[in-house]
Length: 280
Ligand SMILES: NC(=O)c1ccc[n+]([C@@H]2O[C@H](COP(=O)([O-])OP(=O)(O)OC[C@H]3O[C@@H](n4cnc5c(N)ncnc54)[C@H](OP(=O)(O)O)[C@@H]3O)[C@@H](O)[C@H]2O)c1
Image (cartoon, rainbow, N blue to C red; front, top):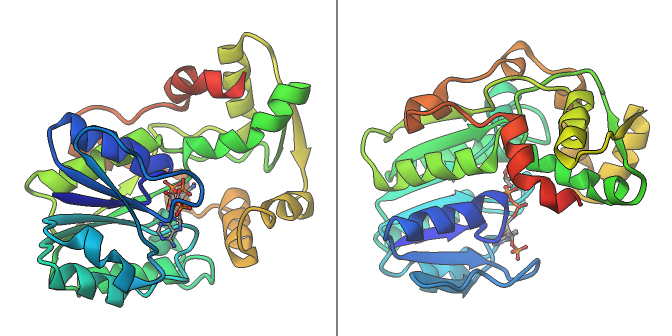
């Protein structure tokens, strides 16, 4: 049995689907705050809070492998306690969803907790794989309200291009690492196949919708004001640093999705044509 945390989120939801379609028994864990944990054949939904490692014990009972995803920067999670609970329950393999920035900016307040969680995973004694995704294609879901209401996209750093990754690619790499061989001790950087700027993403979404979208560039302070309503201030600041002043490694596409899946990473245009209904 495989325990998937963050099971109702962008990646976890797709990972639960991918694992159950392949015939694996899954325990799907979340707090049930945003939506109830998924309930479908092959899935046992469980409510637990990663901030309280003890609450995970019923979910971990009888598990072989754990997909560990913490929301935000993960500052609320005691990684060592969670991993101890997993080891005590007999889990032998853990796949951590971290962030590319835990590697490129490990000292940043925004990403230091994920860097510490990586360290806890690597020294847990379990067989481990760390996934370091860059920015998700699904971050453009934040544009839905103004696209629907005004046919406009408001975003900072309109011409800074980064290789956004499709959460489905992350989920498929996670499924491979949870169930296959050859991934122990690996740290994979997961990105899309090419860099696109916010302005280009707005153009691609407009083409998918069959209606052009107007791009309105926000300055950093305006963007921050919006972001702090959704995330802690240090996470907003760290994210804006990446979006506005990316480091050379953050600009490059990584070969790791293709290396693991044997197919190219999904382009923003493919993700957009699959996801366009969410913007209508
Ligand atoms: N978005 C990006 O561009 C990006 C880039 C790199 C890395 N990341 C990392 O990816 C992760 C987010 O992944 P995602 O977008 O798939 O997640 P998400 O869509 O934000 O969903 C978070 C999931 O975790 C659950 N959850 C939240 N707090 C919890 C807690 N205390 N205990 C148990 N479950 C909890 C949520 O359900 P409930 O709320 O109901 O509990 C939900 O299922 C973060 O660690 C982030 O740093 C994101």
